[in-house]
Image (cartoon, rainbow, N blue to C red; front, side, top):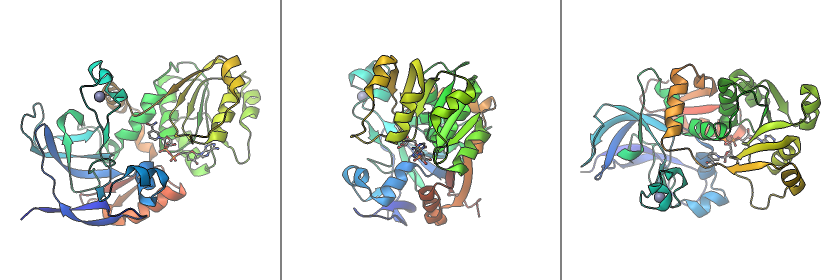
Length: 348
Ligand code: NAD
Ligand code: ZN
């Protein structure tokens, strides 16, 4: 008889998720089986839950969700070296091909053939997940599991924030979702001067302030351009677009200093129009950001947390997995930072 486990599953092409029994996967050559301790809810999981247009064209049900997780290795597949049973790990969610030009050039984060854990194959919203050993990231004992659970989005924030030199610079972040909040913290950590972040949500703006933002803007009742005068600057040196909102992106373009640099992480709609004068006459540099460097970003993230980066401040809710509906509701209404689900029973 195959062993059964509980997993959060998208059962069919429609809104909703179910917590149900599925077979425990078994690790093939080069893979390990991880017993989950914590799984965090990502915006991507919410898209899959709500079954929007992106989810409908991307997800092939039935699928076990989840790509932000931490757990312990319980079984090691053939040929895996350097890992031990009982070891605590998180994992990079993008499985790369290993043979394309970028992979072989040491730039696997730019592989065009990635397979997403919890998107294109079963993920970590389950008691067990199978992961290629190459994707594992060992977690040092000093880092608690509820924090290690969301290293994946921490990685998006870190990859984006570390794209440009922030030391002494004036930084504008549009969008104070979990990733924008963490990015504000990183800008502070590495020594930016002004760190301004915008959103429509005061709860999240307050979290960003706690993380290190020096000025928050609720765009419902304040104008980004007024801030330039307040700070007595001509414009921002560095922009990080983390809202996916065309209005926010256009405001950012207006508020940039000549020669400024923008990292684009938020998923903007394909019909987003911008005033190209801002880009061309100001000589702006723009850089698209996807995922995170494998595995240099993971290294930097780990060392930042070990040397005092307050990643825990963005963790606002820990819930037992049985309450997953509550977690998705929190994510949908935005009254949260990171929401982490527990598989161990230690969160009541
Ligand atoms: P999120 O949806 O939780 O955060 C987006 C925030 O932007 C929300 O708090 C929202 O209130 C805010 N916002 C909406 N309109 C705004 C406006 N006009 N001005 C300012 N803020 C506004 O998402 P997240 O998980 O923090 O991720 C941030 C973005 O990055 C999302 O668009 C997400 O899809 C994208 N993303 C990209 C990658 C990548 O690899 N490129 C990876 C993960 C997430
Ligand atoms: Zn590749």
